Length: 194
Picture 1: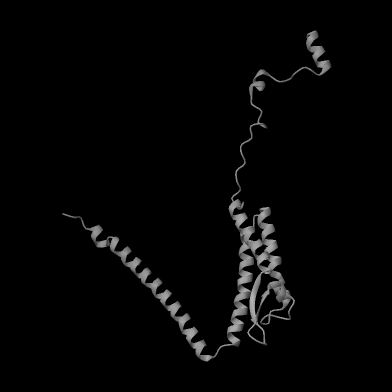
Picture 2: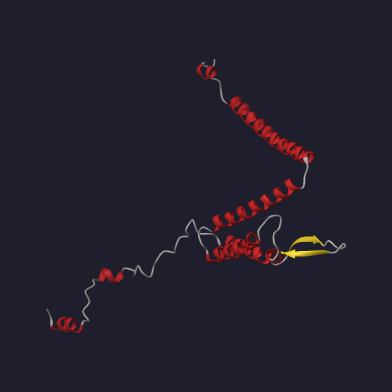
């Protein structure tokens, strides 16, 4: 070894890289842009879902029900908060009503943090609230209606199902007929045309 190389080695200045390695670009500086994960919720949906959660929270403090007082024609507007302070609303315990702002707050927090299961949580919260509301409305309907309204409502629902079923059956039959017309028969394809 030469004296210069020996001196560089002693000082730690000698480079052990070749000229080819010096011309290669540094891969740590040229990283490819990160691909978006397919399970990542788009920002617009996150903001919209978060806003619905906040709307549930705000709506809890706004009027929900109008009740007429027993003395006179005066009515009172009750918010979700004031309903929690009462004994019950159509058999609903007050603790069930307090769930609404809690679910709204949780939904907003999950949406704004970008949790990947945000869509499932939004659907779950909606199904839970709509399911319970349907239960309460059905309970009120049963308590305050007679046989004639039940027969009328049942007949209307059955008519809806039968009408939708008939349309579905007719469309399917038309598609089958169209498909059989467009397919050549087996006898026609086997015979040569003259």
